[in-house]
Every structure is written in structure tokens, then in C-alpha cells.
Image 1 (tube, rainbow over the protein chains, first blue to last red):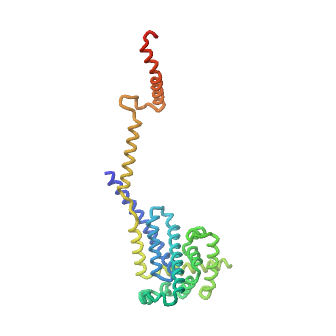
Image 2 (image 1 turned 90 degrees about the vertical axis):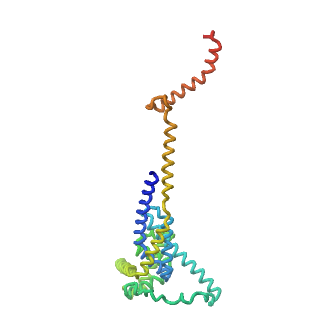
Image 3 (image 1 turned 60 degrees about the horizontal axis):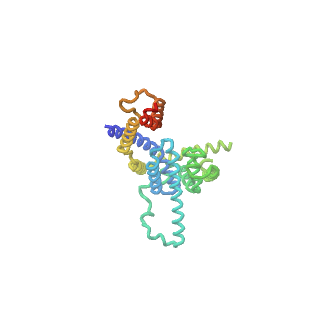
Amino acid sequence: MLSATSSGLVRENDLESNAALDRFLAGVERRALRMAEFATGSRDEALDIVQDAMLVLVRRYGRHGEGDWPPLFHRILQSRILDWHRRRKVRNRWLAWLGPDADDDEDPLAALPDPRARRPEDELGNTRAGAALEEALQRLPLRQQQAFLLRTWEGLDVAETAAAMGCSEGSVKTHYSRAVHTLRELLEDHWP
Amino acid sequence: MSEDRNSEFLKRVRAELERGSDALDELTVARLRAARRRALDARPRTRAWFVAGGVTAAVVTAALLAMLLAPPAGGPPAAMGLEQIELLADSDVDLYNDLDFYRWLADHPDAG
């Protein structure tokens, strides 16, 4: 009797909490994907990163209060993006050291464009300004890109951005200011 | 002026970014949804038996405490407070301390 009652309550709590997590992730997943995509230049890599961030949030912090999820998720996502860049840098160094033919055993098909993939200008509603923005964002150094997107798009304040990026508030201000300056220069033909 | 231009620039950037994320193709949206499902399915469930065990342990502990603190049958009335119980215990200790005296008194009836 007691067990059945507690079992019912537990199931009800789990369902409510799952629904809340589902709502939160559904609300943030598209922006998360685009941020990871700007950082990696690859949709597949971006999807892997976002899925990993979702898994970590749900497994480790699913029982935390809903208010804790946004800062935790952004912290996890930005860490995963940073990890991806570090791994890529190490891999590139090794490839450079081993010589230009070292990467020959890679699947040549992987280098072919995905026929289902849409071009950046398609994704951005066929606007030239949108395509230029995407290109400009990808040219930014990673930390500037992260600071800019978290502040401008996610609407995080300086302290929240610093927490998400794992750096000081001063660094966030510097990265953000440089990013805005660079983007304005790169996009001045589109948005004078 | 510069602030206004910056603000206008950032507004346009935000609008463009929103447009881009709204325009994601169906396949990508489906893959995102699947990733979300997988994450939610991996969520550790609260074990009902664990909660039931905790509740049972709490009930048993409460019952044991009640039995230990409850007065024995035929003892002082239930309304007796802790102070009264302490007084009674003190008087028992006095009786125990005086036991040698009572034994000596029994052995020497003339002493009274």
C-alpha cells in the first residue's frame, strides 16, 4: 500500500520533471545547435556536441531546480565546444608533423558535400546579409564568438557569460567588445 | 550616437540569427528532437522501492522512539512530564544509596 502510493508519487514527479526538462531543451536546442555550428563549421559535429550537452545536463543536473538549468546547460555546451577545438588543434598539429599524406586513410566520401545539406544562405532565409553574418561569425576567434553569441543572442549578462565560458568578467568584456568591433567592420557593407 | 548605431546593429544581428534558427530544415529539427528524446530517456529514474524503504525506516524509528519514551504499564500517568520522571529517578537513587543503612538496621534491631 505504502509502496504503491510512493511509487505513484515518484512516477508523477518524474513525469512532471521530465516535461519541464523537455520544454527547456526544446526551447534552447536550435540556438545551441547554431552556436556549435558556428564554432565547428559542421552540422554533424554540432549535433554531436548538443546531444552530449543535453545528456550531461539531464544525467547530472536533471534533479536540480529549473532555474539552474540555463546556466548549467550553457556552461556544459561551451565547455564541449572548447574541448572540440582543443582536440582539433592537437589533431592538426599531429597531422602537420606527420606530413601532408598522413590523413590519407580518411574516408574520401566524408569530404564530399552532403546533398541533403542546405547552404548557409538557405538556412538564413536566403538573405545575403545572413550569409555574410554567418561567415563573419565563423571568422571570429572562438572566445570572441562565444562571448558575442551568449551576450547578444542568449541575452546573458556579463557575469552569466563569464560563468558559461569559465573565465573572468573582464575577459568577457574584452572578447565581446572586440567581437562587436570586428563584426561591424566585416558587415559594414550590409548594415552600415 | 555610436551607442545607438551599435544597438541598431545588434538588433539586426539578433533578428538574422533568429531567422536562421527558425529556418532549420526538417531533418535537422528531427535529429535535434531525437537527441532530446535520447537525453531524457537516459535520465536516472527515482526508485520507488528506495523511497518506500525510506518511509518504512522512518515509521519504524518513530515507533521505536515512542516505545522507549512511553511509560511502562501501571507506571506513572501518561500526563507525567519529564521533570517528574527525573524526580522519581532521583528518589530511586537515594533509596539505593541508603540500602546499606537499611540492611545494617535490620541486622541490629536494638539500634532503633
